[in-house]
Image (cartoon, rainbow, N blue to C red):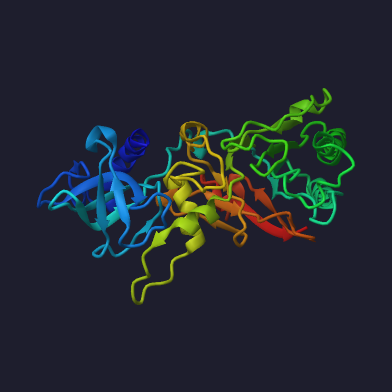
Length: 406
């Protein structure tokens, strides 16, 4: 944990002067238990005073890295901090004073910095033609049957809209589906017959109709998938090899995954990170007269600022996590143009602030809700020359998002 804090902390400390606007605003970095009357910048990982305990203003601690602080902790006094949004596991930079070495009187908190933009959009080859990306998150069948009729309807929409890519996020065969115990076929056969054969038929028809620009389908597993590894981060779903003409168009991705569609970088994970972070977050009350902050935007910003689809530490008790693997496979190393964060929270499409990476974040909701249909999203990416008559290298202003009911 200390090593992880050091790695993330370096990024946060490095970003703090520019985030503050003036370098003089951020004093030199010190270990979290370094005592002194002068203001300093303390970098570490937020934690609670009790293992797994929910944060409150009196229970917030900052754990330093092993290299700078010997993994020691100091309590955070937030009484003089006007604005903060904290959760366990979050790597932050704190400006404040630690007079006696055990309590940091904070005046400002910087909640991380987004990953670097490896190749700016202006330097990438992005499709000169408009294209559609459709994304949906399971369950893909209603709770009262295993017909997967909502998946059929979704594939019909992908056909009618000529989607260049279809990003399907699990669960596909949900482990706790009420009808699964009475199914007449095994789990593997159910996945092959009700999911994969439908997807392959869609790809075969589309490849025949549009041989020069056939669509691609990406499948991302979920910890709730009966056939997937239950431990996060997850490898791709197992299955037999697809027919030769379809295999290049069907992609079984890990969870989380980074994909490229027409030169647009998309990061996607199936965990409900928004709900998990929101359940653990401690946020300051709005200042008198100030507009009410956008909570969904703030929760989505945490993911990119922490450069991880699962920045919580400890993770939820009901989610098996390989923490060492999560620091590698669960990390967001480069800044995406579009961030797909499926959640039970209200569906939305929002552009994150520049301090959080400026990506377009989309929560399309779930394709089914119990015995009824749910939502999916269509992302229409337009060429640079078609935005208000001017060319722009930013992706977000060129994407129109429609969240519709199935």
